[in-house]
Length: 480
Ligand SMILES: [Cu+2]
Image (cartoon, rainbow, N blue to C red; front, side, top):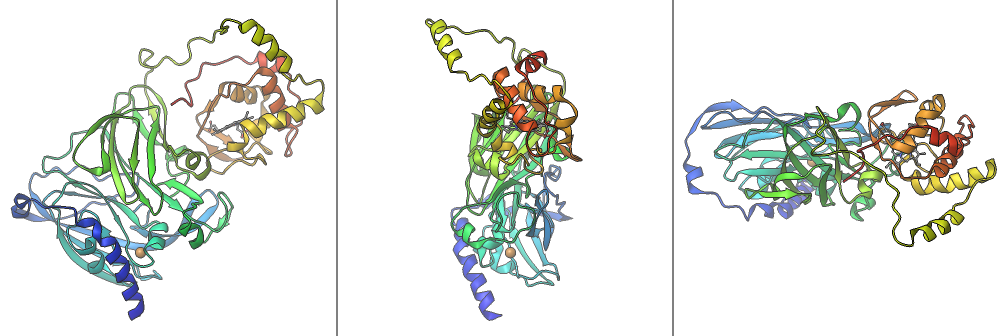
């Protein structure tokens, strides 16, 4: 037992240094404390309500560690170690100058001791040593919130990397004395990288893989603990004209996030969760063990896509979330596609003829299948997977797809015009965005013929004239 604790303490010493840079102001230290309150904690993506009181108080925070199995992706189970039963852990909201009495509980069913290092704490280890708690115990410690900002908290029990990799992190907001400006909606989004024995999407229970974690080769990179935390029915919501504030954190343990929202520009960012605002930002870096406050107004309807712009993580490892914005169009701000004109630069006629010669025209079904397979591998497989089985929760299957097999015209339209909004494929709900892929009618005919003649589908043959017959829709999907 002694050995375990010493190891654990060593871990905390290593991570404790992050508080050294903070300075408290004397004015804060002297502020009067009035009364006592119990802090409201929330599960992601929710944020506790803004603090209305003008005075400082003694704030009781009750946080319980629970080790539990949850899905990291549809059909993929993982044993998470959680602060409050969710990944990331409960959101804690306090006010600059508050005196926090922290009650840290470790559920009796836990197998491990745990603790908490709050980056908002001025004191050794951010509270780590004081909060070190065995299963079935509770530790109490107090701190004064000297610095305003958005801070990460995490477990710092050895092996620290493993505790964090299992989901032991969350955010604590220390509101400045004057509070934050009012917005219409606030959400809590936190990225984390996960390391499982099985590859991405392999079904069933997946244990932690220490070797991948040390090599920094994550299997999953996700927001709020799972690939579908903010897609489908879980998509965040907003209305046209509303202002949104995202409290964005990154638990790591390894990766730095290039946080970006496809289809928006951040009006204001508080980089690294600090006090100096920056404006008109496209992508903001969120370091492991760091945070950012991101604010923007949504002007037009549509799906905004939250991503880590290290983009393979988004399309292949799960770091994708949606904000569904509803309300009236505003064509003056965004028109959608208004024209598709023939573009013939000088000499274009000659190039065009050459291009025509190069286009492979399928003479028979065999040709179509061969050409179609190539188009599939180059244009579709990244999302729908080479075996057509898709990725549960993100990309629907084309293999044996009832959606595909019931209506040829809608399948053609999906490839021609893109597809978004809720659909049901083989009983599963998907609510993603498939971009229109600028393919010729010939290519679309070939790829769909290949898809229809593979993986147990209905063996339809699609001709370019069938593709031509399906109307083109202007679409505003998939653009940055
Ligand atoms: Cu822990």
